[in-house]
Image (cartoon, rainbow, N blue to C red; front, side, top):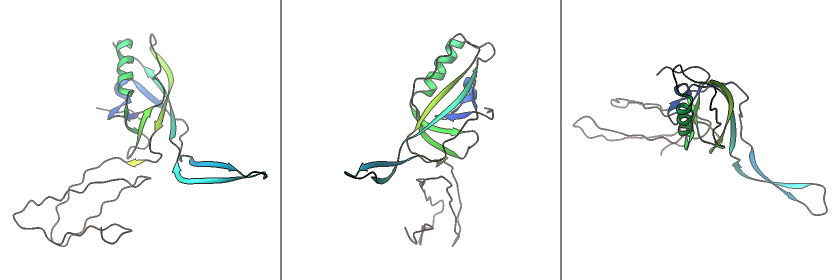
Length: 184
């Protein structure tokens, strides 16, 4: 499938499949820290309490929609609503190596009886930072060979390492290290 620049992928499907295109708009780069203000009786100031967490992030996407040639607008709108339902990975074309866990915060807009429309999709991002989109690396390692796995998300990205012996010899002396922790 060919994707168009100026779109996004949600739950593994690109917006171009549905005739939806994203118009570049402001991007929330950093979520708000979760803070509570505790008034101090008899004083004009407050104590600021932070728990180290962040508020959920909201991201609005201005979209345009065009009914595909020979397409039925009623069928297309229902397919868009089905696609946007639920929680999934949200990836923007301008940031293809990162994704966010997100869901649509409000009901999808109705664009019935129109051949072209603009509307806003409001997503809630459940974790405030980006994850690196999953990649699969296969390494065939000989004796004493080191490999390096690097993740570039803005949050510690969980990963899974599968070690498979494809020979008839035993594997010994496997060592996994982390850049901040000497031995795991």
